[in-house]
Length: 172
Image 1: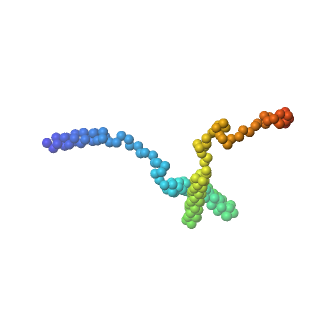
Image 2: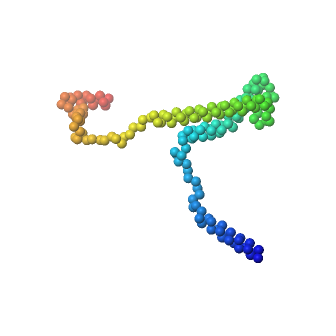
Image 3: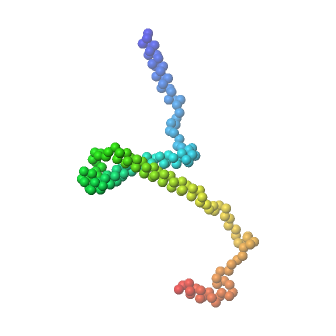
């Protein structure tokens, strides 16, 4: 009796669970962000964060190489202090703190520099006046009351003699 009841519940649960996907939403892909979904300040902060954190490994490597070269030169080029990026760390805790803090400071400087450059670019685009040629209308000279015809060189009465000399000057 218990087995039959358990089998009925199991079959009912399977039928119920197999029918659920029919009522589910068809499209599960998220829609992309709109341009105006986030304010520009948040976009700038996110870009600053990405550039600052992304530069950290490279700047830390460069800082540790520069410090180890400085330490090598300061100790009269002793082979015990030779810079080697693959050797075990021989820095004291204070030296490690100095390298990390210097790296973080340089990375923040890189991020701030990029932020300032982006803000300047954006503000110069806003200030730049764009010429709109949609408002220009071409009016034929015959329809314009204020228009006057300007004779071309060689078409006037007095310029018939000078036209040959002008042509010779142009060709030379």
